Length: 513
Image (cartoon, rainbow, N blue to C red; front, side, top):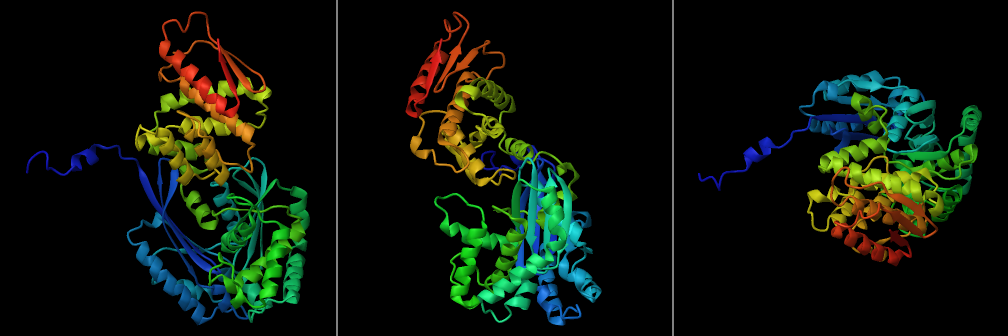
């Protein structure tokens, strides 16, 4: 075989091989079984495969807490699917946790014994408090927030409440109320009557009397909901959103959904486009539970997080992922995966931070979050180089828009993409979207600061720039260079003049002396 026709195996063998750990977590819930298969590479968790199936184990619990054979058979059938997916996994890389129903079932050991014949990994029946802690871990490792947060997870048989700060869960409780058990108790025939909702909501408030005081006393800054039930309710709320950005759940929006359910009269008649058929039978119970929680804890807004128990289990399995700043880990992982020129990114970052600090007061860029977002954009503005050097700003923006970026919200990713999309060439005002969280004037100023940091480091050389005096007024940034510094540097002189012209479309002025 000729050299030119040889397969390119050698090239792949010479490529850098990063250490990869493949892990799996299975959540045996009261409503659904969730399997997540992931790989841990470059300090980041990358989801490879997910399997979710409605099993509704909780429906099989009788008044004596005996789990029916039919319910066990449904669960065992799902485990056969899981066993096929997990063939070849090392025991240390698989963790299976069971929650409310197997905690409560008096014959849980019978199910676990049958499961052992199907799947060669131990099943841990975890306590409600441990379930709450792991749920919080999943949220904390994938959602960035400074301050206390209340995390709520409505399951099939129980609801978990956690107040935490950073990576620490400070207050954990599990209450025996879930969408499956409340469906049986209040909406068994599928009828959606106002009185049934009232009874369910009152029961929730009664259940929460014992923990309400402690939670209110500790307090929180942000409320986050997880689980399929809250995801479904969150999606239904988005039907009323004013623009393309997600809006939080409010008590008003929940009461509006309840009215629509009562008007339909029966679960089978619910016609919400974003409500799946298998969610219809239990959505009313989940809605009543969440309304009761809102009223008891006096919640203003609730945001949704896709991360929950299974993600918490995965992060607990990998020691190297513990207690790192989630956004730092995400950015570092992306820089590694896309082979970002770290030295150059650091130069642009340092310059961007210097410019920001000099302009912040005059330009009213007071929030620390504004500085952080400019910093992340500076570090990641060239992730698109791996696609193509031509149009790098477009490629980088596409990656930052569509990549899985734990710790960054949808709007934060969109802001990063907007800054990076406009870090060079003409500023496309038509591509600068309207944000809920960020003022347009702030976005414009962050764009020009990133652009200026990139232009000033166009030579990609450390120690190239002299000491520059930076001053700012309301809509103007002035750079004062040492005398005669531009004398033998016609290219950067032209670049800065071009940049001055680009700024005008945003009604901002750049002065270079």
